[in-house]
Length: 349
Image (cartoon, rainbow, N blue to C red; front, top):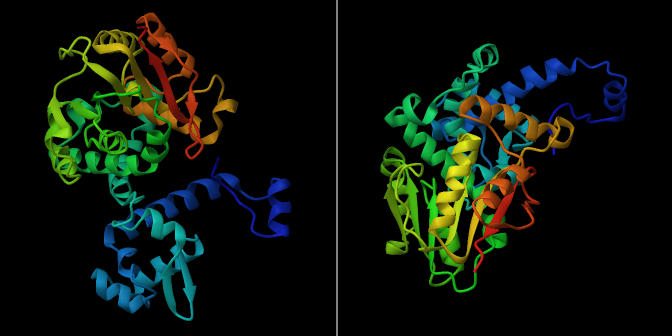
């Protein structure tokens, strides 16, 4: 999957093939303009204003408290990009905006759109990162209290896009009763897994600021004592030996160095019961940029700049598990989200 210059008629297809169109301009100015307008539309409540049906620019502006001229231009642009439909002076949601951008949708990524205002600022540091090689230290010093709120809501929204396939394909040991969700903050993966597997309970281990800001998100799921928070740093916090049937680490190993991930795998192995599973859910780094494709290659840069390492190859993750005495299984590559998957390993017994 990739995004970029997409021809809309035969003449444009010829222009693209002959390399006549100024592709860098289209993939920068048009890309950042579209990105910003989707984010702004979400922040101002434009999509919510049309949740019950089509509306005129005047009606949307009234509901959002915005100007009519500015709202008209925004709706026109979003319609041209396929996020709205336009008919006889009114605008309406398209399937993509109704599914992904309405807050009451089970698939909503609206909070991720708001979190991206913060990520937008981070990306201004790309030049400094390339010049110095020094990544941002987001999880310790860069996030304010308000940023932590945005971060947690954004990650919870991201889970809407990942959790469906993750839960269906997660290798859960038969009769599993106890789970540890490392770095799970909002706890939605644990919630979804516990709802699917009766009798399963989970502890969500994360940094104290993450637990504090994510607590309302977990409470809203109504899972009582079946999914609970536990504050601590996984690199130093004692884990109960031989206590867990499943240990999940989702979207976290790209923040750790190779040595830290080897140590983590060893700690997880000691915490598993015989037959227990260690599952790493993350973006996989292919061997070459060609194999990675556009999305995988861009994510490799993003995570390298905003963390201590970057994405890891599935073979590297399996090797950490193998060195910890676990038996790696074949990787599970998601069909719905390119480049993402689960590398699981079982404890012999």
